[in-house]
Image (cartoon, rainbow, N blue to C red; front, top):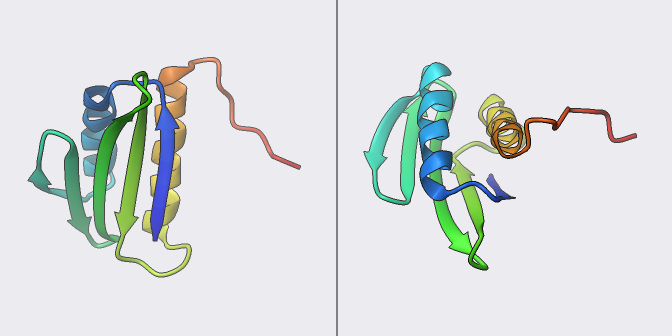
Length: 97
């Protein structure tokens, strides 16, 4: 599946957070680039990339090798919530209904 998130954080901050978050889940860090990371493990394989958009936004794209709503996909969404909390510490998770 493909996921994306837009944030005001710098690409370096997002990638450092990804390194901590996904390694803590038990995924091994694979290839490391200036603007991308790959992780793999029992949950599957994840390719994460960041790019600047519009000067002050960072777009985070995550591609998993899983079909449907897997545990890895749910953790990618949790990571996006973590990124949102870093950008806005007042952010709380609430139901949307």
